[in-house]
Image (cartoon, rainbow over all chains, first blue to last red; front, side):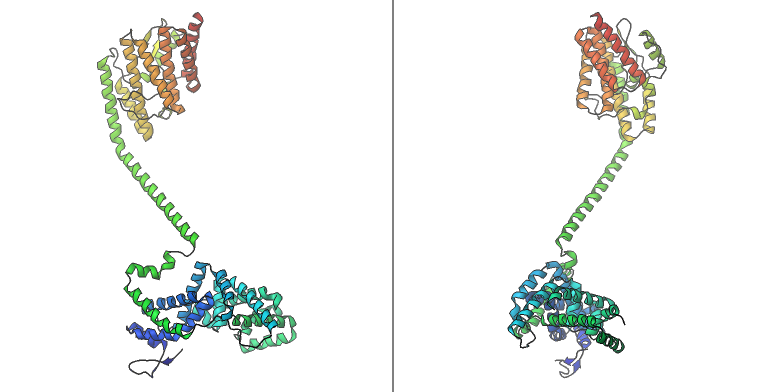
Length: 198
Length: 369
């Protein structure tokens, strides 16, 4: 479990866990929740951003995820992983958002326009190679666009959050087999879409 | 291990999720299988590309505003009314994101409300009708008895005429009438005697004051004598009619009970016309005209065949007596026409026989003309 130095009034140097902070929130200490936010905000945002590919949507969903977590804090069992809990909220909100807005196509089209923002791994490549990479990424975006939300969620957690199968299963509250099958189907779909270029 | 088993393990192999033993099995297989190697390379390339497809990280300014904005939202949320907090918490459930689900929900709710409302309304109306039924029947019986009494006092000098009794003619009288007309006595019962409650036509409701009476599929209340004079039929006592009404009330359904009572009242009115005709011979032609007019209006107003059958019989009866009184060619032709129309609707054997015999009488009169 993640640990950090907590700016507590009692001992600013003490190492506290998420569970400690959650207990603090339950006791009415708002600053404990602030600490939880500071600790997990980047990860939550990364998930929502990968899922939506849109900064404003990702920001809204990340804020919404923390708000939902705060509302449910009284009922949350601190023995469980708060990180996994937050991820689950963020993923579910993102899935609902994608279904509601039906904006996949727009999102990925827009993301292509924002290609300049995207990092390419920092490797020095020839112009021809860059062109090929661009074409590949463009095709990959389209392929991602067509992925079902649940498959995309598993892919995001695995590829971008580098979570283990077990953690993904725990986060999304699905079985290990479901994680593997969704991941396999997602990758098979992507590969089939890029087959002629690989 | 075979290729199809290895294919299933390539994803976990790539993700480092295999046990050491399984991992070694995959490596051993890949060394000797080029197709599985190619598959793994393609997987790795897709994975690499996917990892490259990262989104731009927001700058630090963004992260400095993230927590204050969240705090503000939390504060607003805590100050919001309870119903708004519920809506925010369960927004997706309360307002489904997909438009057609929202539309379908609205339509389903409307249909459900309509069905339930209609069922409740029908049930209440039915209960009201049932609870009101005995009172209505009682009222109508009293009204009928009162009208009978009035007609008896008014003009119908002869026999105390009950309305329903005009439609119920004794078998002996029928036989006598037909023998007088040169016909063999009918082997069947008279239509009135045979008529069951189900055969009685249903009518529209009318008050005693209304001019348009209801109709029964009944034979005429008066029969011609061989001399062409109109003689009143023998009638049963009003108490017998009342008994029958009560009996039918028990046997029949609610609507038919009402029809029967109105049928009695309609016949009563026609009977009054007949009685008055007998009382005032100078003006009885006008009374037959009145009867004809009543039933013609009724035929125009009523589309139901079961009612039309009785109405055409009454109309034919009116024309028959009028034609015999006036002996005008025009009236005789109208009478024949009315009898043929009534014949089209009549189903009772005796009634049809009577209509045919009258047509013969009328045609003979026409020949003489």
